[in-house]
Image (cartoon, rainbow, N blue to C red; front, side, top):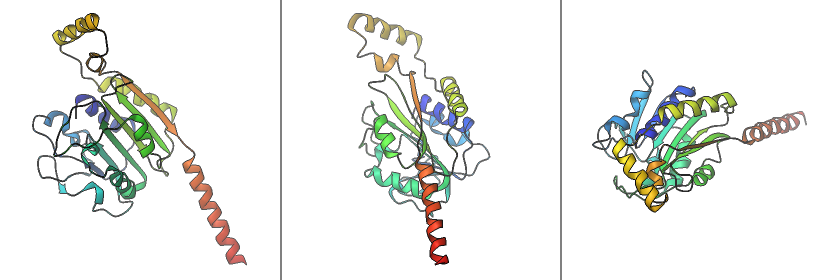
Amino acid sequence: MNAILRGLVRTVSETFTLPGPILEIGSYQVVGQENVADLRTLFPGRSYLGLDIRAGRGVDLLANVEELPYASGSIGTILAISTLEHVPHFWRAFDEMHRVLRPDGALLVACPFYFHRHAHPNDYWRFTPEALEMLLAPYPSKIIGYHGPTPRPANVWGLAFREERPSITDDEFHLYQTRLRHHARMPLPLMRYLRLQLGRLLFGPGHFAPYLLREHLGSKCLNSDIRNTKIENREEERKERYVAVAA
């Protein structure tokens, strides 16, 4: 978790109407990260539950994301920030999160790509933007984003909406980008910035880019025809039932 990812969550909470209840997966707040990791404060007055596999600050319920203790379609919004790299069978987690989300529900997931090993309690995976786009394919409307250098992003994320939520509009996407530039900030201390710039001039940009470009943001909005296909399929089912009854 870092200030840019916290800014991402704040941006999403201020830009989109997110249904409740809100479930944070991986809500355990690591010592020293309380200021950025407490996402609950970004949703005042909302029904909010923190879930993790170990007890601690920020955790309301002990459970495994690979087998969530919720009925299908019972959760409005899921946050999984810097969490799924720690899940052994992350594909099961994606299936479970989709299962428990309401048909108009929202999922915000962020994962590291260029980051050191961090065992909380174990560290298994890294994700590219293309990986998240593939894993979020069941969601017809989504935003895929990252921060850091384009070839070597620090973190990648996806905001995905299920089929009964209207597609993301151009105005919503523009507002999201504007607020993200405002909230997702993690400026370098001046002296460190100057040292890194000197190193870049002397030795080239490659080694220094992840630090100097960590506030560089990239996003794309994807609205697919999955929703229309499902609606058409439901219409066909109704027609078939009508014909069967009429016959």
